[in-house]
Image (cartoon, rainbow, N blue to C red; front, side):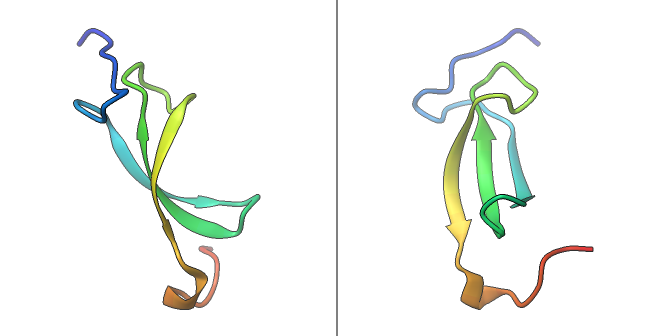
Amino acid sequence: MESRDCSGIGFCKMRIAWNDIQSRWEISADDGNDGFNNVYILFQIPKHLYQTRPI
């Protein structure tokens, strides 16, 4: 599949990942070029919604 611009969050890959630096869960989308090198943070899960970091 060829790369596509996701500046409007059109066709992107999404992931839910733990951010070690910020100590929080984030839902992010890549910029359409795979690899999640440049991401759009769609949602940061507030700390009161979880108790600990993943194992």
